[in-house]
Amino acid sequence: MLMNATNIFSKYVPNLLKILAWSPMTFVAEFLQLLPACISPTTASEVLHSLFDLPCLSATLQAQYLVEAVPNITDLNLLPQYNRCLASFQDAAHKLMFGHFLRSETGRGDTIDRLGNLHLLLSDFSHHQRVLAAAQIAPQLVRMFFKVVLHGGDVELVSQLVPVLIERTALLFDIPSFMTEMRRVIAQQLLAIFSLFPQLVVDYCRDIIEYLRTLRNLTQAGEHCYVHLVWILGEYTHLGYDSRCTSSLLVELFETLEPVTYEVALNLHRQSEYSTRLVLVLMSSLAKIASRSQDLIPRALLCLNKIVQLGKDSSTESHTHQTLLIRANELVNVLKIPSIASAVLSPAPHWSRPQQLQRQLDLAHLLQATSLHLDHH
Image (cartoon, rainbow, N blue to C red; front, side, top):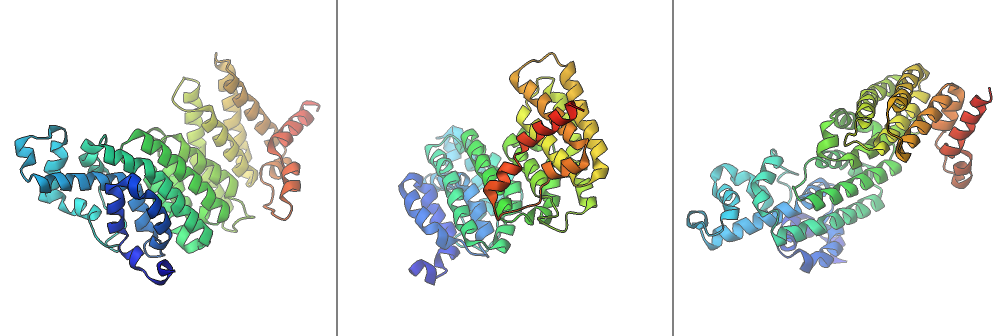
């Protein structure tokens, strides 16, 4: 096929995206077919950033169209709702920022500094129909992008995309439905990547740790990606996946999640914006990490017992509240027997007989069985 014999699509993908951004619903099917030819090891990161910023490109093209059609449009005050953005577009101080979106070829940088500032400048157009249409199709394009990339199985190519996903959870154009859906897509792709390449968790643990330590990411970027990253740390920081999962690394990971767990659990009982789901995943990940380094077990027990006590002191009697207490007690009982904790919470990775493994290592069943055993002793 022509697409496989030339790099013209990957070279000129910014121009192709302009066509799509101007008429999103008209050309989305055609672009989905072209997208695989636009991705290469040298352009993948840039293309991914561009897909995240498709609504911004639509807004920039709209501003360019209006300024070129009526050069003194702001002076005439013909469209006052867009004046701030149109004036910024004509300001030489912002030329490089807008120029990044209007470039014709790849290779001029994956993204730009102060992208958040540009989002603010373009916010006048956040309710424009063309921009909303671009925001609607962008998550679909990102899904297709990763379908292509993950099917190729190139770990080096996939590796360069992990920090992009983590960064962009908190850096999306401010259209609520777009941000919600795109963050859901990002979380799904992070799970898919680390499931295929668990060793990348250690490669990018610094990025993950930094993200999780910033509680602002919970409030500004929502829980979805945060919860998934917590689960990923608990699931894949295992010697069976990577020999670099040393005791010192496990301690650092534990000390990242421990204060977050205390903070979230304390606020949960004060009717905060945090969910029970978040506390459950934090508790489970803490317990998993502690089960791999027995020196951490006393600290994990202290944290879990604190959550149990907070629950007992609370006046809340909801089903989710009871679920939290039950799971905390189950984890406490398991961690009291380190050999059991290791088998239940950190079984060795095994793929040869997945169905049998699932039956043997069903976490809920084993937690309950261990709790019953302890209760009878």
